[in-house]
Each structure stands twice: as structure tokens, then as C-alpha cells.
Image (cartoon, rainbow, N blue to C red):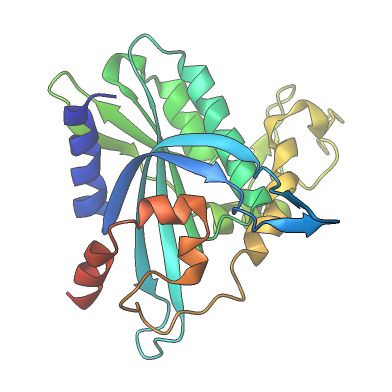
Length: 249
């Protein structure tokens, strides 16, 4: 991605989503380990690296404006596909990132995911798909102007709703609607295992419990240890002065 397009996305995330910090090529990685001595031999386990997200915007927000002990982190993650790239691969990468971040508890109370593509790559079927799975869809035109075609949902709440069966899916055989918690279509008996939502249950429990024990007393003058030791957050919020400036506005 060239710098001009990155700046367009950065401006969009700052103005439209309120992000204080926006970075590119952000790693999804386990925290680094300290050296461990085993019988006099120093070993450093290699953290698992799940890949890099093209662009991530982040901000701190007040969960309760009257009680600053409850501060949360919000992340906006964007996967970009150029005109020559496979758009389906981009969709797959988004689901992989979602799995990776759920496995690592994501370190954020709010998580929004976007697929960004050029206008000739965006079809009605892609729009419908993104709306179904709560994924944002950003369109890029020849002037590198960003347009939000589909607004994303917070994946924590979205996936929790799927696990509770609040969202309906259509049977591919008889087109009747039923919930993803049902094992088969109650109308014609088609197994749900043939439908896309089977993987929702991989994420729902993790997302519902993410970051519940972390509390910030406002935004401190220095980067919190939780952020400094988490590769993804450390990269996103490396310009800590910008976090403080936006917090004080």
C-alpha cells in the first residue's frame, strides 16, 4: 500500500471513527517472554506470530464517564486488497485475524474489522456477506477517497449474539431461516454443518471474556505495562503523546 492511500485510511479512521493512533503493518503476536534459566541454560521461547494487519487504528474510551477506573481499548483493523489481489483471500485473512485475536483474547473491549477494496471489486454479494458477518466494507476510488459501504459491528457483541442464536441464517435447500445454534434446518432437515456459521462457536466464548480484568485509571502519562508488553498494542499506541492529547480534548 502506498503512502497516499495509507494517509486516506488514517484520515478516515481518525475523523470518522475517532481513533487517536493509526499504524500500518501491525503484528498479531504473543507477548514476549523473559529469559528463563533451566539448569544454567538460558532459553527464550519464540512468541507465536499470527501475521500482520495492514492498518490498525486504536483509541482509549471511557466505559463510564463518571468513573474513570473503567477505561477500555477500541481497535479498528483493516485488510486491504489491491485491484490485482483476490478479494476472497482478503475475506479469509479477516477471519484468520479474528481467530488469532480471539485466541490471544484480543486485548481490546471493542473490535471492528474492515475489508478495503477498489470499487470494481465490490459486488452486491460482497456487501451482503459483510453485513451478515458484521464486517465493515471500505471502497477506494481512483482518487483514493475512502467510502464506508458497510459499517462494521463490534465483533465481541456480534459473535456473542451468534452463540446465543439471536441471528437467523437461511437454509441453502429450502431457504427457510433458522438459528446457528440449531443442528439442522427444522423445515427440511439440512444439517447446519454445511452452512458458514459453524466457526462462530470458536470465538464467542473468548470474545465475551476478553480483557475483563484490566482497568485503567484514566490514561496515564506513560504507556501502561499491559500495552507496552503486547506487540499489537505497543505498535498501535507507540505515539503515546497522541493518546494523551486526544484523551484531554
